[in-house]
Image (cartoon, rainbow, N blue to C red):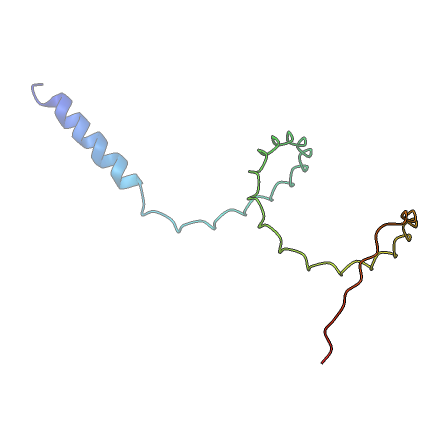
Length: 103
């Protein structure tokens, strides 16, 4: 009885292996499943916020001074002035006779 249990197990293992034949051929691969349908297109996103206004540009440089203009034409000659009033006639004064030497 000392070896009865291991002997029984050994005989059982040999008996089961004797009933099992070689493995059969590999079966065919199964069919590939169908592709799922494409999902719906998502909604359009909202419009982004307007950007900030840019800074004001710098003031431009001062321009150059213009050239001096040409000299103007000479003005027209003025009209002749009026003749002055006639002076008063003098009173009778001494008559001076100048004698020149002849000769």
